[in-house]
View: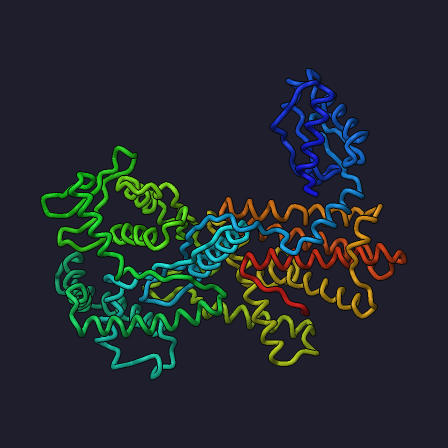
Length: 595
């Protein structure tokens, strides 16, 4: 049964009978934890119908529901709030329906499609801590949209062109001595990132040397030989110079191989890759068409601009005076290409840091001015930066927290913790490795996803790995504990029996709390998708695991003498474990059978 819908129907019936009027909108919400009950009806809006005080209205409806609905056992009134206590037999019926539904929490295919972009790295450096939050967030939102019935296209745009790429190329050409990933023993993305840092180091030294010779800082930054080489390489690349293009392909190839290893360990994937080198020309063509239509304008130096002052923004350059593209130009081209590739998508979700909020406001507005109706369905999934106790990260200075290194540190910490607690004494070396991987990455993902995406956050590796508290390992441990209970039940030939579920006449308060929590799961999934916020699922999974641990401490399962209740509690535990597993899967997190 759908408890919420049934309850709404009975309340509407009560209002109709008691006050001789119908009501469509009801304010029904979870009961505050300090009061008894699970559902609370806010009665203040109903006083215009009842012509009674809020407390009198609440008492009248409560008495009717107890006598006639068959759903409410008793109630309490706090001012104008009617707190309802649902009958145990109703909770048992609710649970029986959930237990029988193997796809519980997921909606059927709704025929709609959506595209979700995440990661979108530059090919001049390895992935870092910020990319971890980006990837985990985008992947989880994709899983949420799948769960609510969408066909999801997971994509990334790879920033594989521009001066930042040429900086790594210039440094490698000057100082690389033919070094490759094979000869250096470095992952390809780390090797290229090494030369990005080298570029910055030599560039600063050359600028300083020129300044010491009396050259102004502004002029020194232009005249530095290594910068002139990078600019020359960019111009040659745009002119399709064979040697430059080949070096570009080679170094980007190293990076892609490195990224693939990192993505695999992260547990994320993509359905299609887009490359800026393929899309920027399309964007350029669209901008030139916009000039012809009078949407954009040219300045005397030949640069192309859009005037958004009437929209509360400012003027934005779209093509430089030398005809080269800017980021906005290529993003225009990418957006248009994606809708051509996937004409059924209802919109695009861009998972990009909040420092780009203005950029996306401009992008969506430009696409709308160009006449693309779907521009209104584009959404910027903005997220805050990740800080560490050690401070802010800087790519050029080589002080970023490398994604590979951090994942390895988390896995190592998980291994050390499980060994210290003596949890792996009976496991093989391979099983220990798999468990450490599962726990370490769970700790990382869970912690990075538990904060609302829009908020800046501090990542504390030590806090994230703990087995107690608001952590991934705590929930994994709860799942493993339930699996141990189920194994014991199986060894005692105690099988969950769907037939006995509806016959349960009395429940413990801890059991009611968990059934109520499990009953919320589909609504939480839909809310998380609607809000683009995996944090809602993180908090839900934590609350469910916490409720089960309280039940486990309060009620010894196997000392129950009533065979029917014992089977119910085994089924109850199984469904709790299944719900935890589903919720964690939406976050890209696996849960162990043993821990």
